[in-house]
Length: 188
Image (cartoon, rainbow, N blue to C red; front, side):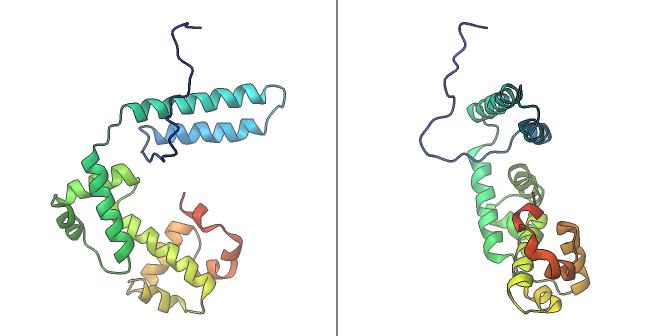
C-alpha cells in the first residue's frame, strides 16, 4: 500500500448530479455486468469482489470527472438540440435544421450529439417517437396506422420496421404483451 494515497471520497457531496459520457462505455458495462454476477455469487468472497469492482468504477468516474474531455460549449449545443428534439419529435426534422440552431455544420452537429448522447440525433428522434408509441399502444385505443401518422411516420410499414428495430417487437406484439415490459429497459 502506498502511504501517500488519499482514500477519501473523490466526489463532492453537494447534492449535484453529474452527467458525463465515459471514455470506455463497453468496459464500464462489462464491469457492471460482472458486479451483478458476482453479487449473486459465492457468499464467502462476494463482498470483497463487489467492493473491489465498485471502487474501480468509482475511481474511473472520479478521474473522468476530474479531467473532463467535453467542453462546456459541446454540452450547451447538445442541450439546445436535445430540447428542440423533445419539443418537436413528431415533426419532420432535418440535420440542417439542427445545425442552424447552433450555427455549426451538420457533421459537427451529429458528432457532438453522438459524443454526448451516445446516438445520432435521428436515432434519438426515432427513440422518442417509439417511446411515445409504446405509451399510446398501451393507454389508448388508437390504431397502429393512427399512431404512425400522429408521430410523423407517413408510412405505417416504416413505422413498424423502426418500432421492431428499437424494441425487438412489432407494434401489434407490443400492444398485446407490452404491459409486461418496462419501457425504459427497451432502450438501454
